[in-house]
Structures are given as structure tokens and as C-alpha cells.
Image (cartoon, rainbow, N blue to C red):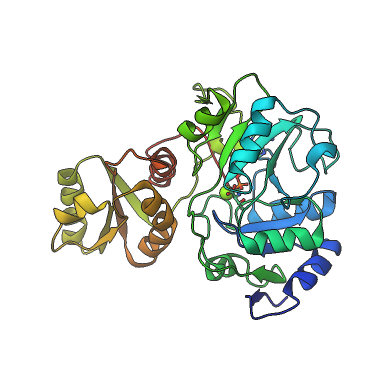
Length: 336
Ligand code: TXA
Ligand code: MG
């Protein structure tokens, strides 16, 4: 199968995407967070294809994506008032909401859970695609399971060239890390995966917001968070201080390797003469750059040395979660 990357100059790309989706194919598409790998959520066969393509564990549920005018009342059983308020405040946008499911979509979407995760992406490319198909589209990030999520069409193509027919190119993803996943089945909303919509943003609308932390040995509420994830394909080391990172770097150099350090702008100033990949100084910028730099690092380094960024503003909780997990410094939840 030839995999076509279709950008805005390809008129008729959404009509073509709709045809593929109706035929049960899988189509990759741009969102404002990362690229997604989408299929018709009502079709068992199409949904199973996603799991097979990614090598995704069968117990890791998928998010369903819909356009802004799609009526989700047939998909969900109930919605607390705070969830309706959050929808009007932040959707379309990088916030996924988990509701009690009516069980209308394929049972493989939620992997046996009685809930359904719904997301309304703000990307114009995603909106145009979802509007054209007018179906809920089940879509995980468009990477092979356990690998770094793609933030460009080219990166999605590298993972799935030859196995899907079409990638809807909307350029680089402005958000850079996956959406916040929020459990809306209880009295108080609970973050299952931190992301660009922060706890503070949710509390300010909902009055309160908890953050879920899996207890050791417990099956996590968001099963995706149970596996190692976001891993670059080279050796890694992780430090909270610059000195440790320098030592690991120099040892690797002496052993004949080519190390590289991934760090924020503050640490970068202390690392003149070292090979570095600079994340930036704020949460928003670091989120935007993290996955592209992890991919770059794995392509050129024998050892990628991470230094924990110091900033704690905005979406840094999400950035730190992804970074610690990429470097194997935090376990608990898994994605794919
Ligand atoms: O930004 C995003 O969310 C991207 C783009 C493509 O939309 N998608 C994405 O999907 O990151 P994925 O499959 O890589 O991660 C989905 C996360 C996993 O941690 C999964 O376990 C959780 O959402 N999830 C899905 N359905 C759930 C449910 N019913 N209850 C709890 N967690 C759920
Ligand atoms: Mg993923």
C-alpha cells in the first residue's frame, strides 16, 4: 500500500479520507497535540486494525474524536454540570473527557471498561476531517506502541509507511504533548493524564480537581499509563542536577560514544562545549519541542542524557510526566 501525505494543496483530501474510513481503513491526521491514527469507532474490525498496526496492548483503551457540532448524547450516559462547563470553557481543545458509556461504539474502543473517552480537537485539519466523516473516530497517537508520539506528518509516515493509505498533514503540532485525560464520572473531576489543560485551568471552572496517582500494584484507572512509554530508541540517563549529567556525558565520550544532553535553557547556559538539545524556558515551549527533540536525540546520540527542567509553570506537570517516563525515571501509567 502506498501511503500518501496530503496537505492543504490536495483538494478533496477530506472526501478521500471519508471514503477510506467508510471502507474500514485507518487514516492518520493532524491534531493540535500530536498526530492521531484514526478509524471508525463503530466498526470492530476497523478499531482492531489500529491495535494491530501499533502493536498496542489489548487492555489500553482508545479516545474517540468528534467534531465540534457532533451530538455526544448518544455516546454517553450522563454528564455532571461541571463537565458541561468544562466543555464550553475548553473545547475544542486538548482536553479529553471520560464519561459513562452507552456502549454504542465498538467494545474494543474502551477495552471492556464501562466508560468512554471523548475528545474534540481544535486543529482545523482534524475538525474538517471529523466533520466530513461525521462519525466518532477512535484514535491513539500515531506512533508504534511505546515509542515517542509524532508531531509532524513525516514522523507519522516513518512509523506507518506502507500500512495505511493516507496521512492528513496539518503541519507541526502546536501543543506537542498529548491531551489532558480527565475522568468526569465522579463528583469531582480527576486528571488521569496531565497535559496542556492544567489542573488550575480545570479547578477554576469546575471548582475543584483531583490528580489521580496509581498506588503500587494497582491497575491504573487510565490503563495506558501502566506501561513504559514515549521511549527514545537509544540508551538514556536522567539527572536532576547538571553535574551528574556532565559526568555521564564525559564517561560516554571517553568510551567512544556520542552522547547528547536534553535540557532547559538554564542548564544549557552551564553546558558550553557539550552537545545539547535545548528544550526552552517555559512549559508551553518545552511541550512543543519535547517529542521532536527526543526523536532527534535518538537519531544522533548513543546516550541521551536528560536533565530535569526547573520550571513549574503552566503545563510543566505534563511535560515532566512525559520526560520522566521517556527516561524511565517514573513508572506508573503507560500510554501507547
Ligand atoms: O492528544 C491526544 O490525546 C492524542 C491525539 C491523537 O488525540 N491521543 C492520544 O491517544 O494520546 P493515546 O491512545 O495515545 O492515549 C490515550 C490515553 C491512554 O492513557 C488511555 O489509557 C486513556 O487515554 N484512555 C482512553 N480511554 C479511556 C477510558 N475510557 N478511561 C480511562 N482512560 C482512558
Ligand atoms: Mg499514545
